[in-house]
Figure 1 (cartoon, rainbow, N blue to C red):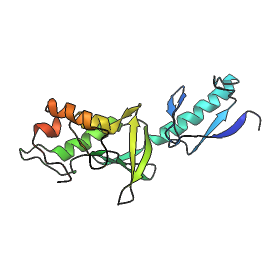
Figure 2 (cartoon, rainbow, N blue to C red; figure 1 turned 90 degrees about the vertical axis):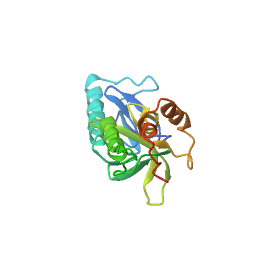
Figure 3 (cartoon, rainbow, N blue to C red; figure 1 turned 90 degrees about the horizontal axis):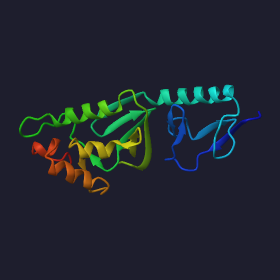
Figure 4 (tube, rainbow, N blue to C red; figure 1 turned 30 degrees about the vertical axis):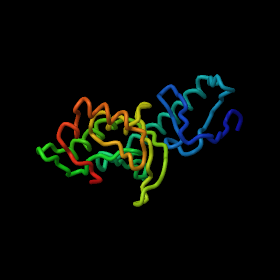
Length: 187
């Protein structure tokens, strides 16, 4: 069919701009349907073709919104369970010594960050439970970095030092778990 070609994406973490936001391999499989596009400028060949592409993108982006938040560092999307890379949030029912409900607040915060928004996850590893350990982003922002910076999770330095700076910022500002003398979930 003229004007229709299938282009494999070279990088699983790649994001492609569209009129409706971004599309990534996890949002529409590992192939991107490119309709009537020529070269790096990527202008639609005609308004009808551009509308067709926009509908494909809108459908793919809409289906990526459906997710379930399990706890402060785990989410399910498209049948895949993702454990956020490099962080550890309080267990869902964890309460700090002063009674602060760290676990339920971390879970609620992750729900608020992702509600009605497309999540793009880039796999980094698999954990001992078979979950995909990934850096997940909403609107280009790293969810793990946000949670650690806000004191809703700890940098899990046993596996990564990616969020040490955010943790120090939260500790200095006495945010979240750092303000309530909460024990890290791994202790």
